[in-house]
Image (cartoon, rainbow, N blue to C red; front, side, top):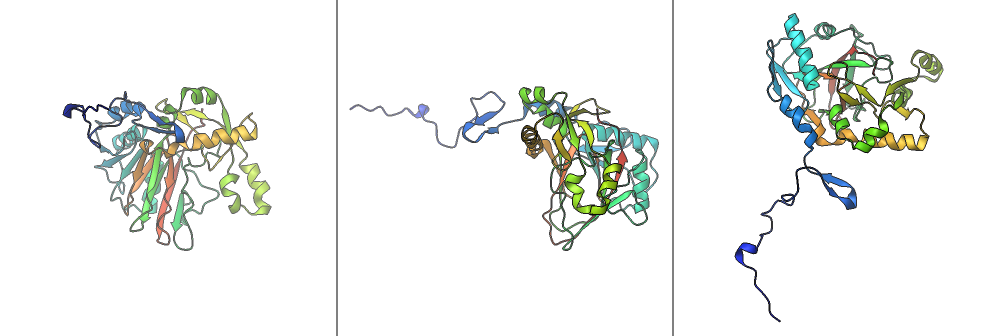
Amino acid sequence: MTTTEPKADDTVAAGTSDPAGNVTPGRVVIERFGLTLGPWLHLADERQRLADPQYDHITVTPRGATLGAAIDGVDLTGDLSDGEVEDIARALADYKVVYFRNQPVTSGQHVAFAKRFGDLEIHPFITGNAEHPELVRFEKGADTGGFENGWHHDVTWREVPSMGAILHAIQVPPTGGDTLFADMNAVYEGLSDEIKERIDGLHAIHDYMLAFAHQVPEDKKAEMREKYPLVRHPVVRTHPVTGRKLLYVNGYFTSHIEGMEDEESRALITELISQPAVLEYQFRLNWEPDTIVFWDNAAVQHYAASDYYPDIRIMERASVVGTRPV
C-alpha cells in the first residue's frame, strides 16, 4: 500500500485555527444541546451609538455594551441645576442604567434627588425608611436573607408601574452583593422572528401575590386584592421616551398570558423569562458605599446577587411613578 506524506503547507497544527473562521459572523448552533454561540450582531448598532456620549453638564462614561454608564461631575448632596437633571434623564434613556460613585446623601437628599424626576411611590409590602416612607429599605444579613436574586422588573403588578428606581448603597459586604441588569430591548430584538410574531399583540396578567403572598396576613388578603387587583400589560411594551420595543414579562409577577391555556402560557412565559440570562445583554454593577444607581424600570430587568450571606447589605430605594405600559 502506498501512503502519501502530507506537505508541510497542508498541515494545520492543532490549536492554531479559529473553529469559526470559515463561518459568516452570526450564530453557530450545537444541535445536540440547542446551544448557540457567536456574536449577537443585533447589539452592534446600539453599542456604537452609545460609544461617544455628548452631554453639556455631566461626564458620562459607558461601561457596558448597550447599557450601563458612570456619571461624574455632579454632586447629588446639593441642589442640581435644571440642565444637570435634564442631562441625567437623557443619559438614563440612552444607557438604561446610570450610576454615581461617592455620593454620601442623607435620606432626605435621596428623596429630594428622586423627586426631580417625578412623583414617588410608596410600596405597600416592603418596609420603608422610618422618616421617609418613599424610601424602601433593604436590610439583609444573617437574620434576613436577600430574595431579590431573580430577573424582574419592579412592581409590574401596579396598573402604572414605576418609571425608574434610584438605589443608594448604605452598607455593602466586602465581596458579593452585585446587581445585574439586562437590556430588555436587546432581549426582544434577539428573539426569533417566529417568537416575535407569536407574542405580537399578546397581553399578560400580573399579580403581586406570586411574590408577596407570604407577606400578606390571611385576614388582609381580600382587602389587599381589592386595592391591588390583577392587572393587564402588553407582553411587548413600547418605551415611552425612546419608542423601542421591550419584552415585558418576568417570573416574579407575570401570572399568565391572557386567552391562553395554562400549559401553553407557562411554557411561553418560561421561555421568555429565560432570555435576560444571556450575558451579552447584561451589565453588572459592583457596589461601593455611597454608590447610587438609577435604572429605567421599563427598559431593564435586574437581579440582586444573594451571595454574601451572612454579611450585611443595606440599601434604600426611591421609585419614580411611571406611565401605563402600552
